[in-house]
Image 1 (spheres, one colour):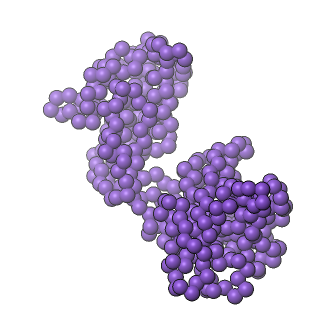
Image 2 (image 1 turned 90 degrees about the vertical axis):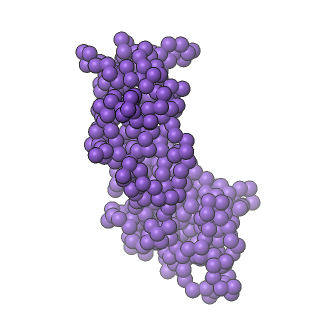
Image 3 (image 1 turned 60 degrees about the vertical axis):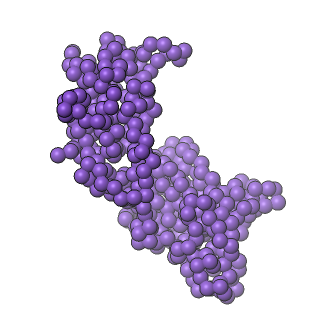
Amino acid sequence: MKKHLLKASMLIAVSIVVFGCSKEEEELVQPEFAGESNQNVILSNNLILSESCETVTFDKVTKDNRGFMNGVMSDKSAKVIGVQAFQRTGVNTYSETNVANIFDSGQPTPVPDHNQIDDILTPNKQFLPAESLFGGISTDGSGSTNNIPLGNVMIINRTTNPAAAFDYNQGGKIVFDFSAYGTVALSNISVVDVDSYEGASNVLLYDMAGNQLKKVAIPAVGDNGKAIVDLGGTSGVVKMEVYLGPGIDPKDAMTGSGTVDNITFNCLPKVYGCTYTQGYWKTHATGKKADPTWGNLANSIFYGSGLKYLELMNTAPKGGNAYVQLAHQYIAAKLNVAKKTSTTHEVETALASALKYFAAVPDGGGSYLNTINSPYTTATKSELTNWAGILAAYNEGKIGPGHCN
């Protein structure tokens, strides 16, 4: 769909990142919030913002001297994303000639001399007059019905003549190069007309070193059906390969027609809530000022420290003890998250690293490996200091949604 339709149809959602937690941290988890979605909510006086992404709609393209597409741009940038499409010539073999082409999926119907392209027109016949030649109505079960005009979409062209924009029945592969961005975080891609016998279609994501980060199957949504393939917001992606086909049995090894559209990436995180410093949490654990987010955690023992959470928060990091410094910021950050406050990828990584450190035990089980008196068993002081610095910046509002006024 085109960018204005995409934005208009986005639902505002709320999500909370909850890392694996020990029994003493269960009070931090608020299940009624974790399942909340698809609605407008105001948290801590900050309105939740809808997700904003860059989207490749195939309306901004570059072409080679043959007239085939060799680059695309998103709706928000002039950076060129390299693109090539190759016809399948056999099992796991492909032509070396680029035939990436644009197809107008909204052209008038019925299409004269349609050459079997009616099944990649949009929207589906259910949403158009009965005389349309569209195929059946199919979805992938996620609500991605083919009911919205997609306009320009991308195809693997049937011939070496770009003026004859027909998709190649035997399928092939499409390669996107995001190196102009360095790396990107990919969220989803729309695919139309993957039939049941083309069930081997999939998307592969690669990092800078050429390592495969993820492989995602494209749902077989049937003739003229549309799938929105969830790529999970996978970060560090430099290259994406989209395979249309092959068929799922030997006789269908040379099938794989279809189109792709609306590649969304680099989505800004949803922002909601605000953060409090460790000082706030120290003074709001008990008594009349108690913040209910603490629950019973204040009197629970914190991992291998030998101290209760609140005792540890009130313990000075003598001699620059990085265990205590990290614990202060970790506890405050976990309480901020439990108070329905958004994070960033950097904060999530620091929280996960800190939890792994605090909860570390020998392979066979036993006492915690890291304690106040022996803090550097599984990590260095500099690592602990770095994690503490990231979490402190989050708690103080320097990164993330900002500090509560």
